[in-house]
Length: 279
Ligand code: ATR
Image (tube, rainbow, N blue to C red; front, side, top):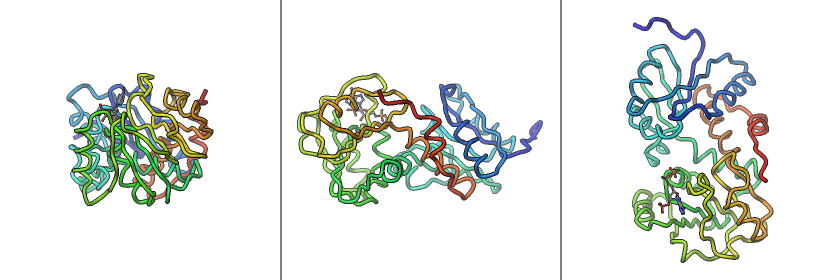
C-alpha cells in the first residue's frame, strides 16, 4: 500500500529529458480556466524504467499522464486499451487511468495538428493539395485526421523509400496518398508540412523551386525554434503564411484535457503564453 495518496487530481508528463516540457503550465492554465484544482508534475524516466515509474505514480492515485520523447512507444505498450490513433502510430502521448484499473492510451498529436491548421490558422483542408515532408512517427499520426478533412490530394515525400512502402502498407484501405523521394518532388501545394526531424538539427531539406501555391501555408511541426531552415525556404519562395507547432502543442493538450475531464478548454491563452516569435 502506498505511503500516501494524492489528495487532488494529479497528472504528470513523463520523458527523458523532461525538464524542458511546457506541459505543467499548459494543463494548470486549462484547469484553472475550467475551475479545477490539479497537481501537475514532471517525471524523469530513467532508461528502461517507464513501466515501474508509471506503476509507482498510479499507486499514489494519479489520474493520467502525458508522454514525451522517447517514451511514447513505451506508453503505447503499457496501456491495456488503445485508440485507433495510438494503434496506428504505435505511440501514445496521453494515458488515462480509470478506477477499474484500465489504462487507456490515446495519441492526440495528429488531431491537434489538423485542428491547429483548420481553426487557428483558418486554413480549411477540404479540397487542398497537401504535402507532408517526412514519413516517421509524426506523419503516421497525422494521416488519418488529415484524410478526414477530405483534401484534394495527400503527398508524402521521404528520403528513405522503404519507410514510405511501410506507411502505405500500414494505412492501406485507410488513407490513400501519393509518395515520392526528394529528387522526384514536384508540383504546387496549398499546405506543406515539415514532419521531418531535420529542423531539430537546423538542416535544410532539398526542396525544389515553385513548390508552394499562391497563399500557401508552410507549417513546421517543430515548436519554439523560430524560423527554421524549412520556413526560411518557404519565405524565399514567396510564402507569406508560415507557422510552427505551438498551436499543435496547445491543441493536442486540449484534446488530452478533454479526454480526462470531458470538456475542451479554449487554447488562445496557452498559445499566446508559449509563442516564440518566428524570426
Ligand atoms: P518522428 O517520430 O519525430 O517522426 P522519426 O520517426 O525518427 O521521428 O522520423 C524522422 C523523419 O525525419 C524521417 O522521415 C526522416 O527521413 P528518413 O526516413 O529518410 O530517415 C526524416 N529526416 C530526418 N532528418 C532528415 C534530413 N536531414 N533530410 C530529410 N529527412 C530527414
